[in-house]
Amino acid sequence: MPKKLAIFASGSGSNAENIYNYFIDSSDVEVVLICTNKQEAFIVKRANKLNIPVYIFTQYELNNFVDLHKKLQNLDVDIIILAGFLLKLPAIMVNSYINRIINIHPSLLPKYGGKGMYGSNIHKAVIENKETESGISIHFVNQNYDEGKIILQKKCVVSINETVETLIQKIQKLEHNYFPIAIEKMIKKL
Ligand code: GAR
Image 1 (tube, protein in one colour):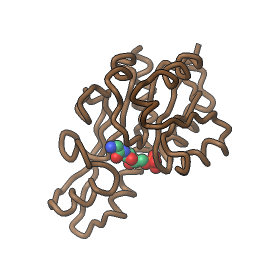
Image 2 (cartoon, protein in one colour):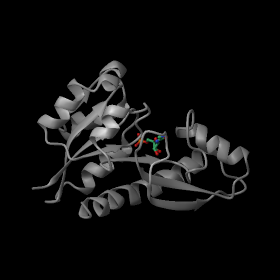
Image 3 (cartoon, protein in one colour):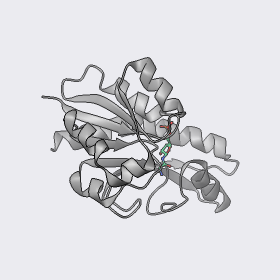
Image 4 (cartoon, rainbow, N blue to C red):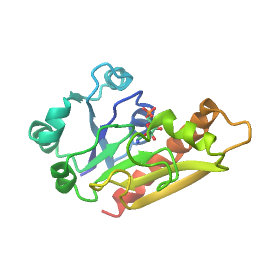
């Protein structure tokens, strides 16, 4: 039986689409659901185009984790992937899926993690602080924001004339290259 993934995303969903395509012919892994708190997010259009079922929920539904949990259980979801999902998960959800929720963060954690550190905020701070390198962190989710055990980190150079836009491109390339591979490796260990 393939392991079933639900991907949570709040934004464009380029990682979600990339993960879906990576596993499209896999007999070990199947993306069965896209979950989002943002009805208007581009991820919804991508999911519709790819014919992946979408579940849209409110922050309240996330926090009480009753209907959402039922939905995940009905589809036999084994692993939850956070791919640009920006809400904090409630403890009840984290405890129901210990070591089975994976997040990607666009910095070298523990640097540039925590509240307010998402998307271009991170890259702006990295450039302002004259960091010479940045990168991505793929990690298990625990109850503390951006603090779960690291599965994989990959670095890139931050050049002297780096802009937020060029850094986003570098980071996105790393994310698309390594996130599906990290998921695959982690699933093989289950
Ligand atoms: C990705 O860069 C991901 O690392 C980041 O959101 C972007 C989503 O891109 N996540 C965070 O900042 C989480 N704190 P996408 O919608 O194109 O996949």
